[in-house]
Image (cartoon, rainbow, N blue to C red):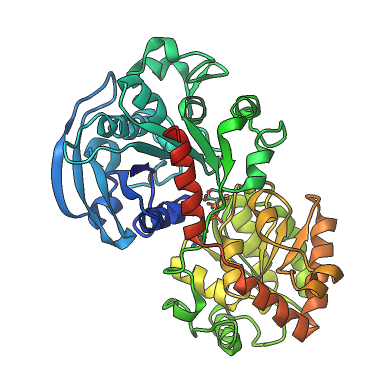
Amino acid sequence: MRVLQVCAEIFPLLKTGGLADVAGALPAALNAAGAETRVLLPGFDAVLAGLEQAVTVCELPPRAGVPGARLLYGALPAAQAHGYVLDAPELYRRPGGPYADAGNHAYGDNHLRFARLCWAAADLAAGADPYWRPAVVHAHDWHAGLAPACVRALGAPAVSVFTIHNLAYQGSFDARHYPELGLPPAWFDVQGVEFHGALNFMKAGLYFADQISTVSPTYAREIQQHEQGMGLDGLLRSRAGVLHGILNGVDSAVWDPAHDALIDAPFDARKLAGKARNKAALQATLGLAAVPDAPLFIVVSRLTEQKGLHLVQAAVPQIVARGGQFALLGNGDAGMEAAFRALASQWPESVAARIGYDERFAHRLVAGGDVIMVPSRFEPCGLTQLYGLRYGTLPLVRRVGGLADTVTDSSLESLDDGSATGFVFDAFSDAALDAALRRAFALYRRKKDWTAVQRTGMARRHDWAVAAEGYLNLYRAALGG
Ligand code: ADP
Ligand code: GLC
């Protein structure tokens, strides 16, 4: 089965969040499960730099206001994938990030930049590469949201699957841009691309795709309700028959404490001593007091509303008062960056804040921490709690989305039956987080129980092979069998 995976980022070439981790791991997993997968990506500098043995497939024509592009094919060895890259320098080769400039202002022509990506997917489905035509176009998040509509518009002989990674980012643009996209005028409609008077890439994906998925079963249910539906819950309910939740996996080529070249000392579930060395190295690097028995709470995150880090901010004084330590790696919201910096300067021996994006340091933190905090308001899947589980760093999470599906709270019952893997709280409140913190401190004092919970978490397998089977079933369903 030939599958074209359409997405805007891919680990390790270009990453702003978990989407890249997924896009980087899925092609190899699908291929191992018997599919023949190629990726399609915009020609950002970092992507072009990772493309090897590139050949030109063809020149793709412009459509309405969407500029033409040269379609390249080659190997992306760093991502263990092969695929197509759109060479269109005026659209993609810019000094800022993939979606916004250096000042974090979204590019004014994002609708054209990503419509270009979607039309290319449809062109491939219609036979633009005479040697390889996908049967399934699998589009990820709003950047690829128009692809199912473009496939339909060309009448291409392929089915489409759309995966929601985050319903909060929808790719909504002023209606006056609609004629620039080159889609049939009649599709600017409730039954189509229109949403509350604007054009909406995410809505288009949800409306036109043959099958829809999101990255956890709980989030698949949550987004069909008003509270988490971001306005699209009605449409999602109407498509419930083709909407599935498939949990993300962990790429063990990248996240495995026994073979992780980025951490200070390797370790595994049997020999946890190496984990203590990672913690000591981390404390030294961050200037934290060298106290092996101070539980070290960590955060690795984008600093946005979604992640619920106001709760963590409020909890840090409690962590310090109880004799714990706290270290954060993150960037984003300027106010939050400043708040965590201020906490670090107030308690330099107990609190550290590294503002920025640093892949290696993320690994060092996950390896050296005792508890990873993910108190999100909403969380489609979440990957850092899965990395925490893998590295014996107990996740402390809110019971929402994929967090609810992947972490089991340490209660007397779950400790007794050996199913506990972390700490889970319900209400989005300081009090609920504090109660979970107290459970973490209490368990930390019971070393044998703590180690048992670590081992349970480390043995939990969130394999991409399982997710790949789920996607293959989705493709088969889309293909009508
Ligand atoms: P989201 O995609 O919503 O940001 P996920 O938990 O799915 O959340 O994925 C986040 C990914 O980004 C993880 O691989 C995490 O390690 C990484 N990450 C987040 N912030 C940083 C940072 N400041 N530095 C390095 N890696 C980060
Ligand atoms: C999104 C979500 C996150 C998910 C990731 C990969 O960025 O916020 O929960 O893990 O996509 O699917």
